[in-house]
Amino acid sequence: MATFQGSESPFTGAKRRRCQGNIVTKFTISKVTGRGFSRGTQLPGGLLQERDKRAKWHGIPNLLQKLYESSHPNSDFSQAHSLLKVLSSQLSMEAMSFVTEDRKTAQESTFPNTYTFDLFGGVDLLVEILMRPTLTMQKKKPKMNDDLVKDCLSVLYNCCICTEGVTRSLAARDDFVLFLFTLMTNKKTFLQTATLIEDILGVKKEMIQLEGIPNLSGLVQSFDQQQLANFCRILSVTISEPDVGNDDKHTLLAKNAQQKRNASPSRAEVNQVTLLNIPGFIERLCKLATRKVSEATGANFLQELEDWYTWLDNALVLDALMQMATEEAEQSSTESSDESSLATSPLRHRLPQSMKIVHEIMYKVEVLYVLCVLLMGRQRNQVHKMLAEFRLIPGLNNLFDKLIWRKYTSSNHVVHGQNENCDCSPEISFKIQFLRLLQSFSDHHENKYLLLNSQELNELSAISMKANIPEVEALVNTDRSLVCDGKKGLLTRLLTVMKREPPDSSFRFWQARAVESFLRGATSYADQMFLLKRGLLEHILYCIIDSGCTSRDVLQSYFDLLGELMKFNIDAFKRFNKYVNTPEKVKLPYCVI
Image 1 (cartoon, one colour):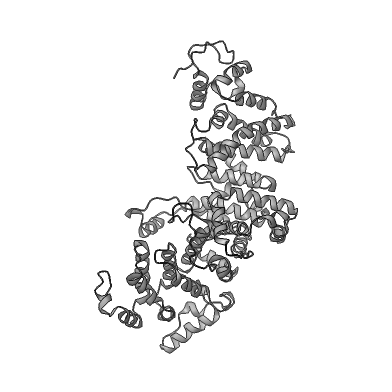
Image 2 (cartoon, rainbow, N blue to C red):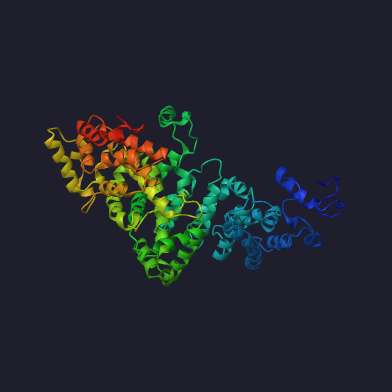
């Protein structure tokens, strides 16, 4: 590709152009070296117009030049906003095609308008416009029009998803990333800001430090419940340890040993502490996780739900519609009115019932993930104490039949697209995240008994008394006011649905892990007998021997659960021997004798 040569200044236009690629090449070089051209405003307008048709730039460089000239610090931005709307209409179509057509590879040939916009400095110009109020020396910062801010953010997001490298270049600007968080204080620009931040943090090389966000505590406390749920999507990136692979060097034992060697906490752990220090943060997450939604009825509910999944690739479209519903209500200034505003919104009533439920499910997935990560961190005991105090487990128990595991005629699985093994629907993600939370909550912690109700705790005491063994100290110390309500506790409900799952269900693995975590730690005869009396051992053996299950992960999880259930328990061995001591079962090659 040809390049500019000679000593003539590019601003004069006096240099002879050798080929069509000269301007593009010069811009590309300037992006790498930081010298020379940086945006289209440095080129004569006549030159841009002359080359526009041949290069198929669709007038974008010329519009950017006008946008730059009309967005000086002392302007009212009205003309700049009009120009931005014209540019936005040209770019939004490409972004829409990217989202709806299986997310093509971002390249110049596929999205020429977005590529041209970035090439001629459009992304840098919009960042400059957004941050301009922060650069003024005046005590009273000038306020930009909310609609202009929203349009700037939307165009930036379109560029991120359509043009390779834009997201990484924005992520490299720490000042801009931190500035974006300040825009979240405005409810009118919150959704666009959160969407852009989520995209940027996903590619950022170094994890952002939450303590560096100006007035983070005040920011989070200002969120209503819907905003807080959206914010959890951002937090999930900031509190999770980077994935270091699944080879033998990164086993749980190796990770624990590494944590002991590392005296200083990681950035993710520092961020976790920062969140826990925000007043009321965990309490609000518990309220979000256990918030009730109206139940859906009708025989066609599953099909309706699947239809929404085919075009809802993520929460963006859904959030936009729900935001419109909230704005129509014109009342959500306090946390107490969050649910009422959504419930009374005219638009919300016009949305399909399944859409309302999916919206709530998407939020709960993010909230449960954040709680799960916090439960696995160094502040686990502190988190456990708070989750118990705010009655997370009883709240989830009350939602189990109505939302988490609703009763259907055949299978709980929702087939997504053409791949029947794809577990990417919101409902399936919600169930798996729920099971992962139970696993983290129960594993080696005395609060595991909160998964039972009062009658079931009494049953454990009776088992210990009958066997003439002392009760487990954790059981004795369990606060009865914090356990599950109703006829069944959460663990018993889980066992019920566990027995109904199809042989190769993806849920079986997570269900077995969750129940196994209840048994982990010091062996408790009463805990084992409680599960044995509910037919768990026979169910495990049926799945291993008779169900025809072929999934290695599921079979391994059931063998692990079987080991915990039978450990040092003669009654369990008697039940096991009774089940397998038949000629047919003994001949099976994988039967455990």
